Length: 493
Image (cartoon, rainbow, N blue to C red; front, side, top):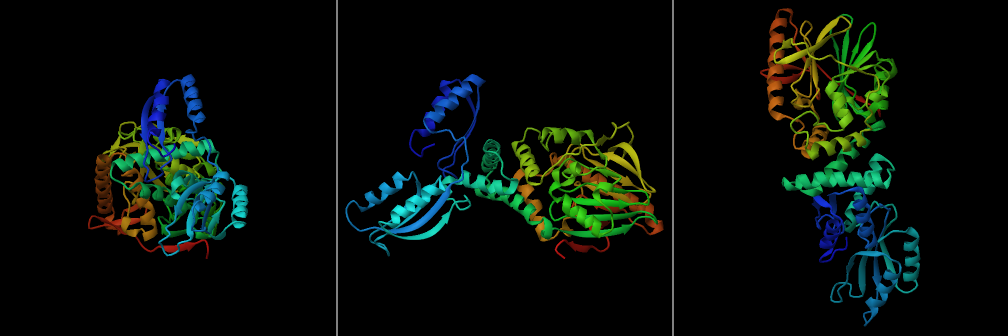
């Protein structure tokens, strides 16, 4: 909308005229003086008439064309009419002035500093040729890719940066995504967050994933002999959750998949450790439906075992589904954004655990029992503190507890992983959809690990806690302590 008095009132009047009810509106001239987000409820016919009228007066943005950005110095004579003549050239080119600065008592009395946003690159070239024939020019910056747009078109520039992260998306899709992102900016702004920090956190999430692909991919690796015939590998990926792999004489079994965007790098890493091809996996267990734990499921040929609640979260594309924070716009939009950035692909061959028969271990219902090699595990249903549909695996006889994201050894995370994890915490305010239940579950799992430690003490073994993030750990003074050594894997090396 034009940045002038009454513009917002004009738009609201059109919405009212066609019986629309404004559910949400957000405008902040500090972010973008020309963009307002409306969310309106109306019927289809009124919606089309409303759009037509807004479009007719130039208010409705329906495309995200790449704008050129031109910044330059121009030297004009210090005489009456000189500025007017110069602006005639700008107006004729249909360029939009983002910035102009001139003071005849300044350090450069004959020089104007001008920034322009221009829709067509050819228009910029034509304008420059005309100006060069009349004035002395010094080009400061000239960009036709949309990467260096002035802040006066913030959302167009932000859209261009999103395109670099998710590919060449259609304008309609990208505008809907901008609308959703603006909604979480509005929500977090109401909670006292800086909107610029919100936008930057979103982009940094996608950029960090891109930077850790290919030669940028790395992992911390633990290899642990569980029995004479079963080895366990823990791979801490650059971003997101751990991937675990059991190697047995008969099959390899994966617990959690990592982000989908890493599937090629994970395959190369497995080959490096002699663990075979991803397509030869026997089974895959996905502890919960967050993208960093299940986003690679659709890239695998093996049957994927998961909770029915995870299937529902994937279908609804809302990580808060099934929890008391289900209606949170932060959770819903974050799920959309992270799934896009991380190339989420849902598993195709899903095997669901049965409903709990009534048996419990501690406070957790026992869903099923499974064997991996010569290990027998109980599948325990969580209470939904971190996420609906999350489950744990416990093998008391051999001292293994897969705690998913209920227990995390934060102290074993390097600085880069810690910073990446903090981005999600900032954007959704808490990664647990029910913090009270998450605390209850954490206490119960720590008590369970302590009980297993006591039972195994005579044999000199410990309960190994396989966390959702960070190193495989043991309890030490009530805290998680890394078990054994890790080695660093680097794709570049």
